[in-house]
Amino acid sequence: MTSLLATLALAAAAAAVEPAAPPVDDPQAHRFTWAAVPTATFNTDEGFGTGGVISLYHHHEGVLPYRDELRFNVFVSSKLVQSHAVTWDALRPFGVPGRSYVRVGYFSTLTQNYCGTGNQVTCDRADARAAADARGLVDDPALADDDFDTFTRRYHLMRFIRPHATVLFRPWLRDKPWRMELLFGWRGSYTVPGELGERGPYPGSRYAADFPVGEEGLSSVPMVGFIIDNRDNEIYPRHGVYAEASVRGGHAWTGSTWPHAGVNATGAIFATLPGTPLVLASRVVADVIVGQPSVEELARIGGTLDPIAFGGAFLGRGVREHRYLGKVKLLSQTELRAQLFDTTVLGQDLSFGAALFSDGGLVGYDIADWRGDPLHPLVTFGASWRILWNRTFALRWDLAASPDEAEGPGFYIIVGQVF
Image (cartoon, rainbow, N blue to C red; front, side, top):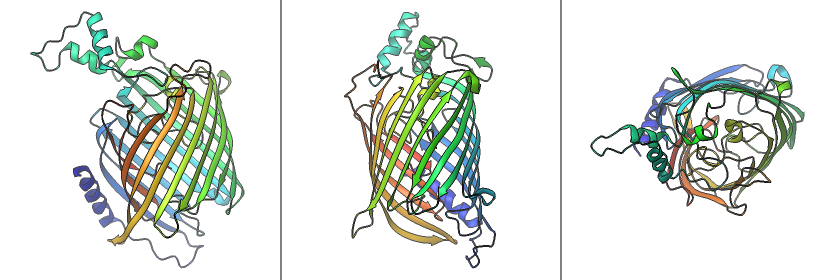
């Protein structure tokens, strides 16, 4: 509750200095608005974080929710995670029917999880203690943080630096209803194992057992695909469908260190329950990789978004991020959402809502080598509090738990809808 109040207070302070958007008299007029949200956030995987989001909006020709958005993200957390990015998102860029998306960012962490691969990894602390014993380390109860404690704390963690970029172009074959788009894109990153001043994985860690010197190299992955979008609203859809299918791949010809190929199919449906404010939203994702991807590529799905799955703030809420890694992912998400009341504060339109949700999935290392039970479903359950701000972006507070996660419930404060 303290984090919720802190974020609301910061949002209100930002709203106090943001001018209200002028009335829409002439759709041909160029209007510019902006929003600045200092953040005080928390999620289970990254710890307490601070930073901010500044978005600049260009409105023109009645294009919704905006014609252009230029967004700046800065984030630093108590678990020494840094995530900074600049994003340009444009609908009808330069008057061309379509959408373009460019994102350039920097990510570094000392505390990313690595439990192994497959769907039965545990990150069991007993394994960490056994590895410490094997190295001759002794737990001294008189010391709060001796070498034994440091080793066991880091045993299931990774550290790396990862600058990254994504470029997408989505020309429209036809506009709504039933918008149809082609998808052309590229995502790339350069991974440096270690941290500033010290290269490589944590000595003796679970990750070092699989990759003794880490995985340094370039991931360069072009993609092509097709999209169908009939949602009534992309910030908070009340009815409609969204579907995309794409193929991607990295090779020496594309400059990639790790040769691999992947296919992704994603579909989502939204329906308002008659006579109620309730919206039933459901998404399914199928993602399969062949070849030899890096661990970071193994952790992500393909398509227009590349969130980590299964586990974390987007796919697998309630399970620690980066826990279940595999080339085969069959995932689902269902939410029962409702926006409960609207208000205007200092010229800003705020809509408050809530949701119940469940994430589920089947994850295997490989079709031929599942590394676990192929029929073992991963399931999470949770509840959420949501705010829609000026119909341009969303804030969410998600609390989730899973019978597969011994570390307790996950709590996330995130800018943006899950889907």
